[in-house]
Image 1: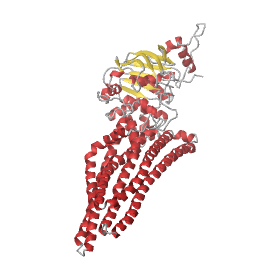
Image 2: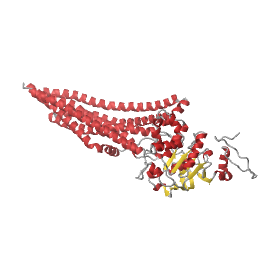
Image 3: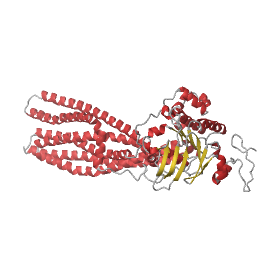
Image 4: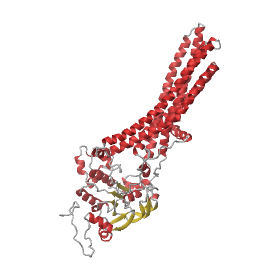
Length: 626
């Protein structure tokens, strides 16, 4: 059952990433972020660039060899040596460029790997409010598709810009030495069409960014649908959910096509520039040959240089295109890197030994105020209570009273707006997070079970647990019979989010996982809501046993779970209205008395005239006896 305090996440309208759109980074910041990814691999990229330059030099030497070949033909000299040189230039140039391409591709994959490792490590340390503000699918798309786009811009774009630029300048210089007039004709055409290319580059960046956002929305919608797959089927919502995914996919397609259109325009402009230049040079060059101003061999070499100019120009256009595509991805990655993370300062190991050592923890709330966001109403208004250590303390009250938020503040999932939360007399803000959480076992409302085996789920918070420890906790959580029935025992796969387990089984797995940690402080949030009466009573016995040495805090709407608690904290509208035992609160707190009466737990309630009423008897299932 929901406590009603989960109003923190931003469920309002917005872009797929939870904001109004990914901000476009200034060029300086984009290059700074680009260099941060590029820097660890700069020597490998430099090596690839050297190979590419050597290949470019070999290519540039070919028109000169061709000119010499034509001259020798005119002078009726042997051309065998020139043919050997030409062949060697072609073979060597191709081989060197192939090696350079491999080095760059390998380096590009290394860039992506490093970026994904860094981003995953950071996203898993995000503060909970940041995760609740974002969409999980969008965060996943940044790790997958955005980092893939990063590959192109950090290596291909950089190297293409360097090698293309050097080759372009070298080609232009050689063409100038041959004939300045023909060079002027060539540059005039290239500059004219180059202006058109410059105009379409921003459109490529804009379309790519929108396409990536739409891909993130696809991931978000699919994650939602598969996360509630039974609900989707039971609601007959397959077609509606399919339509939602189709809309997101159509949006991604539309912007992808738009980006492809602008990229096609850029490449077509390059091809058009070269072809027009070729025709102009052929016409004007032919006239200059006829007039005797240049030789035929010079015109042939110039035309070959013009063809070879296609490669550096293409590389420069590719670099610009990849930069526009990659800059959109970099902006999204930088935004993810700027999300607020938890500072996991060094502390004691989070092993069972750490969690289980020491006395039971005490918990004190001192005038605590809290709200999820500045634009939302407060959840806690000066909450104060004391849990001295060991024993069981229960938190009850209507939905929205702020009970679950108590646990979130103890775990430091959220930071208080005012007041203090003390564990063992120390403000939780003075603890290192690993040390604080190593002392706590936490069972959430929805008792999440992760994909994997049952053993992996049980030992998730206690990876060093022995088989004997696991067997002991299976018995305590009433899971031993389940394990005996499973085909592969503890090594049975439980499915996505524990889909192969019942709700009660998932809850018991979560409880066993927390107990295996041997915490000093155990937080149980609606830990029995999906258990049957027999297992609920068994768990009550386990909790009672554990609470002799461990501080146990329980949030429950089913009061049958907490009637034996050492103390019960009654919360209402973000405040503590009463603290006492079950009998004390039935007698003196109207809200608790109403909750107890509603659930047939009011033992010996008092009538207005002061006379006791007959207690309502219950059977083991909590149902009034007939």
